[in-house]
Length: 491
Ligand SMILES: Cc1ncc(COP(=O)(O)O)c(C=O)c1O
Image 1 (cartoon, helix red, strand yellow):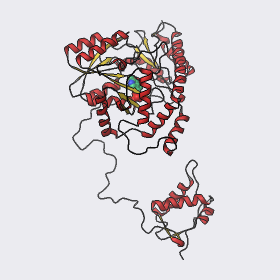
Image 2 (spheres, protein in one colour):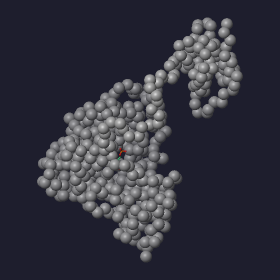
Image 3 (tube, helix red, strand yellow):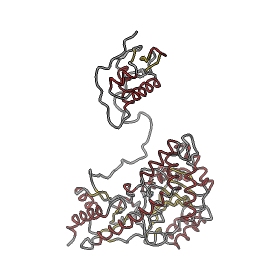
Image 4 (cartoon, protein in one colour):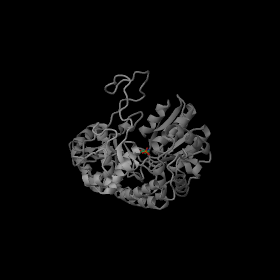
């Protein structure tokens, strides 16, 4: 009989990883290195367990794993052996290896993107972002258990296979109910396409709408990631100004009279970045105008839930009998940006085509996450979280406003926004916001000058200061640093 292999060393197992997998990797490694040759007998599970100081069940699991992967074979009553036909572990080179990763493509190609200018965020810095939620408040325990239930098939739903490109039906049903009840829309689940956040919704929408050379009207200032998407697809962007009542619809009307406008992209609820809510009269005028000229109105309602003063105005999509509005929403602002769930609704035929396009890009979304989200909505968890986050952000908005008002010297000015997750803070004309941002970064506080939100014309001397992701203490610290940097402008 062949002598069984002896383990003549004591391995150290890493905490947090299944021990049977670590034993499996150890034995597979010995085989790969040629220290265990095909046909070598392995100790029985009882003996292996004793040698490694683990329980027998762990040794059994390790062998089962290695047998399943083809490293070992079992010969009935004779025992367990290193397989005579090992799994292929090193692919055969057919030519000399290429060496390091090639930098420049060897094919004809044009990079459509400008070099990316990412803001420098010093480690440990306090960041006034442009209005993202506080992921520390996210209902992670509830989400994790819903996710686990779906993965393990213990919930009502267990679908790990291919699904509709429009997204998981339970979530479309839950969102349809929510949009109809809370936002006055008139959707059906078949008329909603789930996406991985607003950004993908914008890309799919733009891809279906835009032909190279088409004119797309956008708010100025506005949301650059949306502009970049339209531009990539060949659109010509035309800026339309924003004042204290939101988009200047008269200006849009003048543009439509001059040129064929394919689409308008706007953020009417809390305008990005100025936070202004588009007034009712302008909404009526805009919808009539879009219907008259056949303009697609892409309504980005990115932070609908967070409105603090009065009943929020319903979206444009709630009053659109002509089918001109394409309505985009997201759970990024409601829960956390990393949970990529967004949605598009609009004219049914358009949504059907979105689903077909989506299938070509991504086949379908994260079905497990979508089903877990549907469970959280059905269980009332999302409503509970919304109330909690709403209350926290309301306090934070007021805390930031109070801190800024206490800055001496009339150096900053802002309108308290009725909702949203950021303030649009204007600085006195002589304050150089770029320099202030640089000096603040040295003090480990990050702000982003508002000039980047302008497509054309003179930029306001302003900064969009997100408050939702920072506690009142963090906000106070950030503004204290800002006050110190602004000191020299006081005279
Ligand atoms: C205007 C606007 N739209 C949409 C989003 C959300 O995008 P997403 O859902 O892709 O995270 C943001 C987030 O910053 C935003 O500012």
